[in-house]
Picture 1: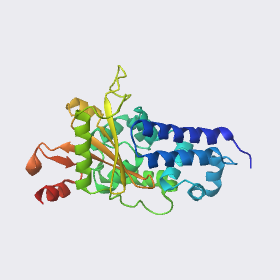
Picture 2: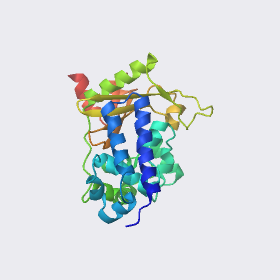
Picture 3: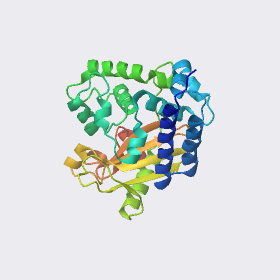
Picture 4: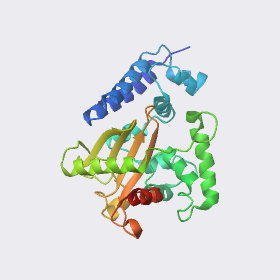
Length: 284
């Protein structure tokens, strides 16, 4: 089978760049090394990785040394789209609204509202919002449109997950998320975190956005202040915290933590979408 070394090196290069950024930002060395080992595997393949995926699908990637399901998903994303959302986030150049517009039926205005109101910046997070009722709660979406978007996403993401519907992402408990939130805000206030220069809402290109990599109970976390239009509009960029969590296979989920402004949890830090769990946590 004909090999195109350029494709393999492109994928390996993105994996190595992510490893370098993670190392610079203080991430766990085991996670850094996992990316580098996967990069070495892809870079040293004797065949075109894109043809491998075309012939064997995700199973072909999972059969490679040093490539677990999360890294296989990343490689597949690079091959399909030429981009990798996680790497763009680490660089500070992620434009989630453009990513959301790759879903048929989502135009610029809806993409902006999904991002700003639901704090969603990955297709996986969008699919979860379509399943748990948050998407259809947006004005102008409704149940029928949410079902159509959910079906489209299931088709788009189906090859990555394999056969079957999306498994619910449970993620860490709110106690862990709130503890990570406290660590991030404390270290940010103390100036102890590296900063990145986000592309959005940053005309002077200043490196102002603190980034934290930490871990708890087998979970890996990447944490940043929200850099959405809505956060800037409400002057909440130093209050809303977005927590991305990964398991040992590098499969990702996310939550947003804010200071509640009403109800019984007013002035408390709350995980959006998990308010009932937060009430139980604070009540205990």
